[in-house]
Image (tube, rainbow, N blue to C red; front, side, top):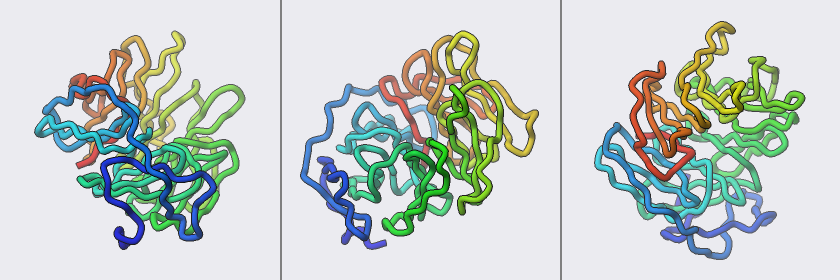
Length: 282
């Protein structure tokens, strides 16, 4: 993809006009300054980088403790598989480079909770169901019509896990990447923030009897594999696998972004004091 055709280079984010997406799927709109953000405490205590939001998209370097405000206003940032790009949600599904000068471009019309496929060439997102689109803005396809959101691809790219409403709760669903065989994968209390790639296990927050959310992992090939990972009071949600699948970052009910081993041990944090919705990349 030729970024010079489709991007502009600035540290101030430009909002795309809703409904102004060109046939190529790539537009730019009038400029606007990034939203003010609280100062963040980024700890040099982990390998890789975590993209997160305070209203503005930041990147915390776990090796140096450096914290960079990218200038993009938005939520739900997600690294691409090679960590060179970040997809995020503002008025549209948007993408930016993960290094300065943070090129930005708009991929599609309004959508929510976007995530990359394992090749970094497609993005899934929610908008009344699960959709996918190519990174260059072509191939927009609706996969489900069930109110699904928070999609996350399997490591091999053949399936997408997501949340969808059933009665008065949200449940974990799976659909093939071509839109076939959408089905409920787990019957449980209400769930939030489904995350799959790169691990074979799906992460999500599961509602408890005290109305808090705790983090669980689940292997969709084994119905008996549901495993509780957190137990503290308050909502533990918004998880992300580390690039090697060995650790997990998440937004803790204790405040900020914490990390732990994949089995729930080795709790450490907060590694980012004032952020949430972390995505762990290289």
